Amino acid sequence: MQTSEESKIRRVGVLVKPHQPEAVKTICRLLEYLTARNITLVASPRAERERIEAETGCALEVLDYDELAASVDLIIVLGGDGTMIAAARLLDNRDVPVIGINFGSLGYLTEVRVEEMLAALDAALAGTYRLERRMMLAAELFRGADSLLRNRVLNDVVISKSALARIIEIETRLDGQFVNCFRADGLIVSTPTGSTAYNLSAGGPIIYPSMAAVVITPICPHTLSNRPLVVPDDAEIELVLKTGKEEVALTLDGQVGYPMELDDRVLIKKSRTTFNLMQPLNRNYFEVLRGKLRWGR
Image (tube, rainbow, N blue to C red; front, side):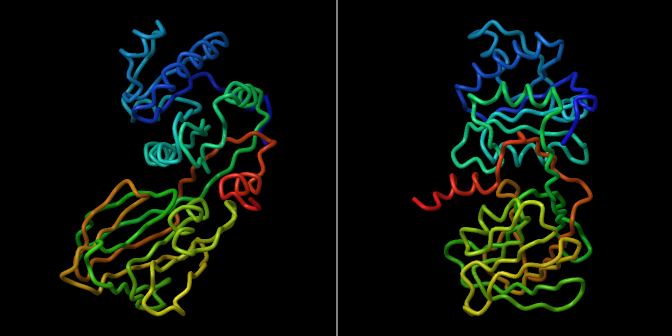
């Protein structure tokens, strides 16, 4: 838990889910709340500045993503988990806490409801909150000696075939040791945060967010004994595509993709940067799971 003495929030950035009409009114409420406390609010280009000013009369400062991330003490995300994942990529290696206000559907990361937003901000400014440092992964795609794609992920790294492709083979190594050559529709390497996303749909386990672990989950494996494998988060994972002449893609967090070819390699390591999620003290992870997964209903 932080203390009020440690809270030095003077400048707040807001990221908005595209095409979200209700966010317009919410941004104006944010601006009024923060201005009354001598805190500056800046928005990303997607905030539709002209529309907000025309509809509400609120004058809004807008910055490019890099400038915004480098200049704020706190980021507020108005959207769903997809917007939060985009925020994690935007922050790069900056140690900025994030609050998610749920304008999406499931909202595992954007846990705060719109009606709770001002109370959550009161807690943030008072320093009465819990900061969860969520582990991220760094993934890099190689073709021979050439690096084709490099990025960090909050949820998962996925190798998958197209709908019409045959089963593919993915050779998997852990710290240089051969694990298996998975024959499947694909393979998911997931963080604990991402364990409730694609990993869960593919039959993988739910991993508690603070666990130092990564889960490797085959998608519809040809051999049913190929089950999900939980490994230490400090291990280096190497995936090599051993199938050619099929449509196969590498996807990072479901938002960044690249086509793969025979013998392309993906190296996955724990990122040195964490995603710092600011949460109210009364939040309970299992309460979130019960609500989102409809346990017992």
